[in-house]
Each structure stands twice: as C-alpha cells, then as structure tokens.
Image (cartoon, rainbow, N blue to C red; front, side, top):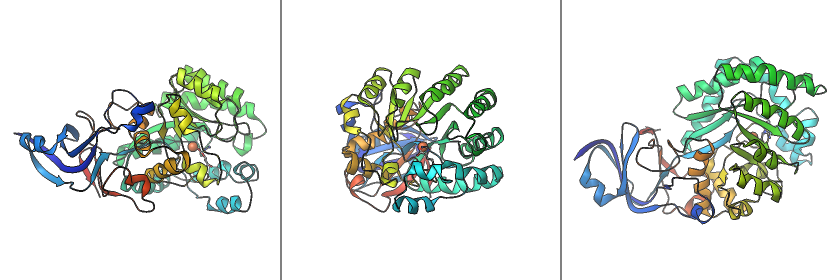
Length: 414
Ligand code: NIG
Ligand code: FE
C-alpha cells in the first residue's frame, strides 16, 4: 500500500471534469462524475482518482476525509478580476438606481477615474493588506485561482506598484494569482483630452518596463467607444504583442464596436464581457481560438436587461468560461457560486456547463490547464468538498456558500 497525505472518500458525486482540451458544445454538459468517488493526494498533488472501494485498497493515508452525501469538485478558477484598489464605489450603485448609466457616471467624475487618486497615494503595504483581505474571502468561497489586473494607477509608477502587489499576493497568499497589465483601462484625468500622449506613454514607457520586470503575462484593454476605441486598441495591443505579451480584452461590453473581431484578428487568448458581440465576431473568435469569458455578475450589477449570448456561443462551439469581474465599480461580486447561479438563471446555461466554464475552461483561458481546473492525477490538489447533494444544487442554492472544506495544493484552507 502506498503512503499518501490525504484520501477523500465516499463522495456522493466526484466531479472530475477531466479533459485534454477545453470543453465545447455537448462536452460542456459532461462532468466526468464518479459516484462514491475518492481522490488520493500527496505532496500537494492529485495522485489518483477513482471509486472508493478501489482506492482504499491502494493507499494508506495520513488523513482521511469522509465526503458521504457531499460533492467533491475542483477549486473554482476566476479568470477576470480587479482585486487591487482602495476606495469602494457603492455610491455609483445608488446613482445607477436613480437612472444614470455606467457610461454617464464615468463621464461625470465617477467610474474608473475616481479609483485612481487613492491607488496612486497608497503604499504597497496598504494595497497588499486591502487586497489580501478580499482574496481570503474568495478562497473561503472556493476560488483557488484568479487572474488579477492592474489598471487603477494609470501612471508608470502606480501601475508597477499594482503589479508588484499582485506578484506578492501570488507569493504570500494561498491563492494562485495570474497577473495582467491593464494600463489601458481608462485615460487618466491629465490625458483625457490628449489620448495620443497617454498612448505614447503606455507604448514607450509602461509596456517596456512591465516586460523588463516580468510583472505580467498578459496585456488587457478596455476596448469601448468611449474609452479605447478599435483603432487605439489595435495600436496598443500590437505594440504589446511585439514586446511578448499575450492578449486579453474587455470587448463589446456595452456597444458592438467590433471588439470580438479585433480579439480574433490579434489572436487574443480571451475576449471578455461580449454582451454586444456580433455574430461575425463570434464566428471569428471560434476560427482563431479566442476563449470567451462571460461576466454575468457585471450585467446584473449594472441592472442591464441583455446578457451575453452564452447559448449562441456554446452552439457556435466556443469553450465558454465564466468569471466574477470583481472590481470596485461595475461588479463587486467575489463569489463564483453567485456567478454560476446568474449564468444559469439569466443566460440559460445548464448547471454542468456553468461548472465546466468556472473550472476547466477557465483554467484553459489562463493557459494553466496542466496545473488546475479538473481532478486528474498529476494536477495540483485544489479541491472543494461541497455540502450539497448534487452538482445541480450549486446554481439552485442562493445566498450562502456551499463550500464545506476547501483544499489548496493539498492543504486545508480554514
Ligand atoms: O470589467 N470594464 C472595465 N473594467 C471593469 C470596471 C472597472 C470599474 O468600473 O472600476 C469591468 O467591468
Ligand atoms: Fe473587468
């Protein structure tokens, strides 16, 4: 019998979600469920997965967890967040309820620009402490990997500071944190009437510095008519590519300006939001392997009626992924479980599809599918023991987290 650190046994449903490629079409409905499932863990990694009767014969664990009546699944992967900021902006929710749109608020002193001053003034330590608290809440709710973006500094020094905080969050907290540079989140106040100058700083100063310091794998942009339009986005992202960055995009969130098409043209890894994406854009994304990341929490928080066309994308064969978009403005949601409920209730995704989109496909969208996103031998032991009788319970239950125990690289999270 082989000695292992941990054996989880008797899971009513063990959702392996195993797959050698991002799941598309009908595959998104397959969770690879093992009934009375077990998983053996050693040195932070998954060693074996199977039925309990087999695994108890093979392994001699230091610790055993009985998951009778529960669901065991991979930790959530949240591939689009903005967790590093200072002030919250709940006043904007009230303004939206009084009839102002997100765009109007951002053009009248609110929005992304109103998050900039505090971030510029804050020390790295202050930013780290605030972000760490937010990240512990995500961990407690079952998210074991996030992508985190800069974009609330919008000057060379403050963007570097944000990216250094993101790096520290990865090193000093249990969360896997993948870093994205979002210097093109908005034009800062001082350049709002001189776009050319800000683009010049972005391209000639910020991007090269971030590349030199290896502070981000990806470069993202808020591509929207009133922020960075298509031409500006193309120019900035082409430079980013030349410097070795891979591309993610905030695309076609509010207006159909061809963001999805641009993502396809540039070979972006992901295009996110896509509420207003055109049919042509969807087709081109499929052709060029761009993963759509849908953010229904944002649509919900902005009080909009129209959600991203998830069904159309699944039918088009795109490997849909889901994320929270956690940020201080348009969506202050830190729960992937809530996002899964919204994906099902507002975009008609099936429970299994939404779970695949929040684990395996999300891991592919961050190019870390060899490490996380499913329960397969060799992957990191990021596991959730969920106090629920079936996977369908996850979108069905609203309000409290179903996580009974979270495990990160084989270690229990409290
Ligand atoms: O993804 N769209 C741009 N960025 C965020 C909003 C950030 C903010 O309002 O502070 C988003 O929704
Ligand atoms: Fe965002």
